[in-house]
Length: 117
Image (cartoon, rainbow, N blue to C red):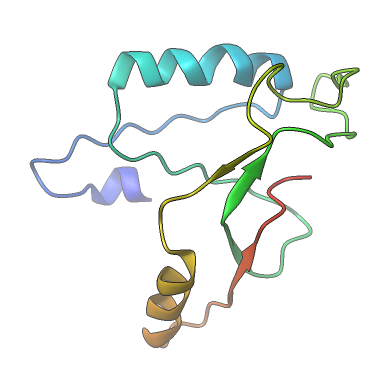
């Protein structure tokens, strides 16, 4: 929907659908960063189990035990070998949550520190 609505004229918006596949993500995401040199990246995931919009404060690199869409899981249970244990968002998710809640929309926003595991 954001792609249809757009942003300001001075903002370039690039939207990609990325498959839930460890190996594809490891190849595609760095290539997209290199191609676009973004100032901000918003990763949006969809979960059939979710009952709220969940804002992730950080992303973890280890502890992944689930199979991806290709029925693959790294033996190391690690997304990026040698990568940092955790990457913290510089965005104040508590403030984002408060601002969304103040809009009076029929949307519940929660905050998580356990992205995707």
